[in-house]
Picture 1: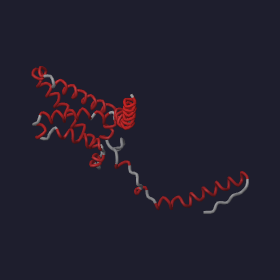
Picture 2: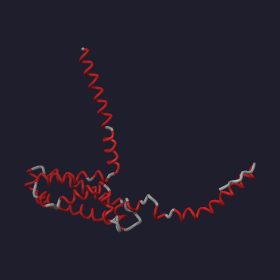
Picture 3: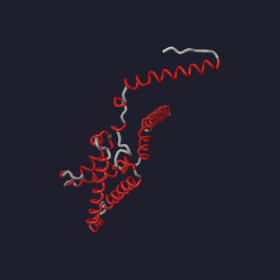
Picture 4: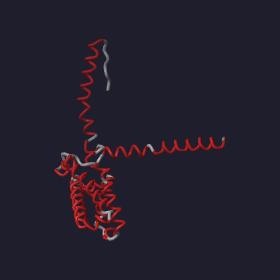
Length: 202
């Protein structure tokens, strides 16, 4: 492609006109050579789009997040109350009923989130947090786990940890804390070395 250059404003206008003519001439050929269906980035395969279906719009809504966070908080309170023998003996059946209701809410939540990926529901499992939620909720119905009090309590504790996925700000905070661990370890090593040298010198 050859571009003519002319002095002054007239030359700049002529160059702009030639550029527009080149774009009109070669633009369709480039579009045919690289169809949009073959682009490497396809966000629809990675996460649900709010405009794709009703389930995705529900997942993206604030009330849905509030219900999930509230259920996790109630489940955490019930789990803490069940550690007291007096409360367990007196209100054990009520606490078990509330826990069962929380599990039902988690199952419905999981089903809605999987439906949000329709017509590719298996894309739900491409996210590590989604797999974590599925395993934690599904482990409640495993006979071997439900029959062991220790494993069942561990699964219930993991259900509380799910709040990290629901609250993005908390997830960013924990990620920042995790990334600050190596520098803290270096500072601790330097401090220990200074104390050792100071102790040896006397």
